[in-house]
Amino acid sequence: MAQSSSSIAQHQPLQPANEQPKIMIKMSAAGIAISQLHIQIEGWLLKKSRVLKKWRKRWIVLAGNKLYSYKHEKEYHAEPTEVIDVSNILYVRHEVAAAAAAADSKSPDSHPLPTKYCEFEVTLQGKLKFMFGAESNTLRDAWMAELNKLLQLNRAMVIIKEGGKHGRILSFGCKHFRRNCSYLCSCCNKWYHCSYCHDEVEAGFIASGHELERSNIAAMKCCRCGKEQALSNECCKCALKTANYYCAVCKFWDNDPSHTLYHCAKCGVCRSGHRRDYIHCDKCGVCLDKTFYRTHKCMESATKCDCPMCGDYLHMTDKPVTFWPVCYHAIHVKCMEEFLTEYTNCPICNQPWMPDR
Image 1 (cartoon, one colour):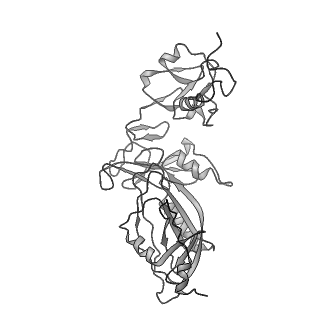
Image 2 (image 1 turned 30 degrees about the vertical axis):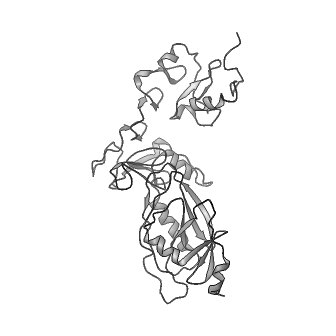
């Protein structure tokens, strides 16, 4: 039973007093009235978007993940299914293909299709939420599969520009690293910008969950021209340099000018800093600062363990590592600084920061 137009006033829009209202852009599928794909954006949305203006004339957002249609005078329910964190992003653009054919305008359950492209910007703490209707159908699954293909460049490709939206492109990348390429994992046959982006998605699956091993990186794709090719530091099609730093052994790219990296053959990984400032200790199995190397106490495989604070594997970490002064247990520098604000004993063996005299 359709509601009367007077019932619209009874619905209270979801517009908190101190927050910007949550806006949803409807991506309609031909012939489907309830179970369409929705994209909900938290944060600032491009005000010039014709899709948004048209959408706001037809829909109103209600509390409890509900939508009200002005056209059909009825409510539709949507459930959040997935959240993608795109923090630290300066500019993001997604192209989402609309349905191939428009629904019959005379049909009571039809909806006009939006434009093919949805362009928007997000704040530094923005998030993208994908929402589906309560009913499940094969067309919805097809939309999700198509959307995943578009988002496999870290599920939200970051374009870092100089001087704002219309400035010169400085670099591509993700929320973890700057690099002008993505790579293919041979296990899941999907494209990602880095191992962190891969593990955030793939490691959570119960049946097929896996973490990215460097040996499983099969190919790379240029972010500018989209050419799939063998691993290198330059695109074979458009000659774009993939990164300022490239390690063929680790299959690692980093285009951040503030980062200084080198590869240690004995450690088997890339380390942060200048090679001239570090000496590799064969017994500890790690590169140490020259000043610390002269006075340090050797511990076999000192960094082949997890950080006692954050749990990251220290031997493969890209963050600076230090050692407790007395017992020489390894820990991240930042983790130690935070730990010492409240405690003074080693979190592993309870040794004090400095021995009693």
